[in-house]
Every structure is written in structure tokens, then in C-alpha cells.
Amino acid sequence: MTTAIRRERGLLFEDFEIGQTFEHHWGRTVTASESMTYSNVTMNYNPLYFNVEYARRLGYDGILINPLLVYTTVLGLSVEDLSEAGGPFLGVDNLVFRTPVYDGDTITARSVTLGKRPSGSRPGWGIVEWRTTGLNQRGDEVLGYRRSNLSRMRNAEANR
Amino acid sequence: MPVTSVDNYFEDFRVGDVYDHPRGRTIDNNDNLWITHVTMNTAQAHFNLDYMQHMMDGIFSERLVMGAVTVAMVVGLTSEDMSENAFMDQGLSAIRLSTPVYRDDTLYASSEVLEVRDSDERPDAGVVVYRFTGRKTDGSQVVQGERTLLVKRRSHWAADDGHGNEGRS
Image (cartoon, rainbow over all chains, first blue to last red; front, side, top):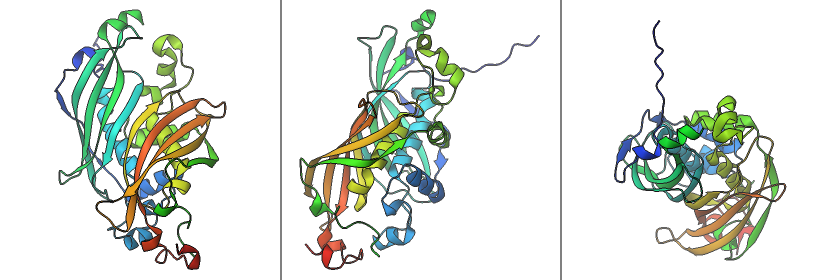
């Protein structure tokens, strides 16, 4: 009988080292259509995000991709490496939107581990902090932020 | 017909002003699922009910609404008052998610203006920083954060935006 191949995804607390870098998988081409839907469903009522005539009148090349969607996409691309095996998201700081994103731009993500420490209140868990950057197809940084997350320790598995 | 309101240009924001945004938003699992999946977020806590019910000794009975969905919904609830006339979103900071959000939770939002200043780059716009707070109906805080915007000045934009006399400051 063959053993099934089961590839567990995600890294645990012990796998993170300060200064290590990640080039995250997949990338994502973003479209104005999905950004308009996202903006409308999240009730984000700035017409820059869903009215092309208005966006052009303000001097933009077209519909701006909602930067919150770009951030959420960069976050999504980083999850398998950083936090899929972890636990709750603790916070985001210094999220800066640097370059407008337009229909058809392709976003990739990379991160560097900034710090790690055991959780004071939750045995078996640690807190890891990363800086994550989103880039477009020309290599321009479109956004960057710092995120911290609870991260499960290997020895915590015995207690599950 | 003006595209945007006349009362939320840069000149209208004052440090210390507090806004109680009138609309609420009941979060559905579809909101959580489509944003989670379209952004390829692979954390199962947001989309695998079976996994979630076994996580951390079974303290959860539902999938967690992804944090960025909660942030987007609360920012959205603030947007008509705070960013309808924004020229661009410059950033967010100090985002803290304090209480888990689940499907059928209804969120409400309030804001406080923290900073109002000229822009170094654009004479036709200024910088507004505000703190947004999202709460459930029982008053528990689900998220807080700071949002930085470049907002159009009425003096430069109201006429182009279709505001006549009411737009003159």
C-alpha cells in the first residue's frame, strides 16, 4: 500500500530567524473590475476606485486599484510562508502606499523577519514580526508594512 | 450634479472632531470568504469550519472573519464622511484587532481626527490623519487603526467637482 503524500504548509515559531528573507509565491495580476467590486462591497465610497471619468479628471491614468485590496493581496501572498501554521494576527503598523496600482499590474510580495520572542501570556506560542513589501511588475515598491502574529511552537503540538 | 459631497474637503476637518458614522454593516461569511480567497489567503481559520472547530482546544465554533476584511468594512463605513474627497490613500498604521469577528456580527464605526496639515507635495490638497474604531452592537471594540489621506482642498477643486456657490469658502 502506498503512503499518501501530504505536504503540510506553513512555518512554526522555531523556523523563523531574524534577518531571513522570503520571496513569496504566485504573484497576482489585479484588475479594475475586481477592485471596483471590492470597493463597492466594502462600501468604500471614493469614486477614484469605481468611476474612471472622475479618476482621469483628478489626473490619474485610469481607475485606481483600491490600495486596501492591494494590501490584502500582498498579505494573502505572504500567508503560506509566514502565518498559515500560526495563530491570530496581532497588528499592522506603518502601512505606506507608495505607488498607484492600475488595471493589469502584477503584484508580488517579499518579507524579512524582524523579530521573534516567546509569548508572555500564552505558553507554546511566540510572537513574530516581519516587514512585508509589495512590488509591481517593474519592481517599484507599491506598499510596505510591519506585521506581527502569534506563531505556534513545535512543542505545542504535543498539547493539542 | 456633483460627484462628491461639499462638506468633506480638507478645509472641513478639525483636529479633535469626532464622527459617529450612521450606517452599520452585518458581516456575512460570503464577505469573508470571497475576499480571503480572491487574495489567496491560505489561513484555514478563515475558510475551513472543521479545522476551526478543532483549533486551540475547540474554543471557536465558527470561522474567523479575516482581519483585513474587518479593517476594510470599518474603513468603508467611515469613507463617505472621511475619504470621499480624498486625492489618495497614503497609509494605515496602529491597526489592532481586539475581538474576533464572526458571520452575522454587525459592525459600526466612529472616527476621530488626529492631524490636519498642509501637503509638502500638493498645494491643492492637504493631509488628514484620523483614528477609526469599529464596534459590534454590544459595544465591544473589534478594530482600531489610523488612516492617512491626502484630501482635496475645496478652494482648488469645488468648482471642478460641480459645486457652485455652496462650494465657495
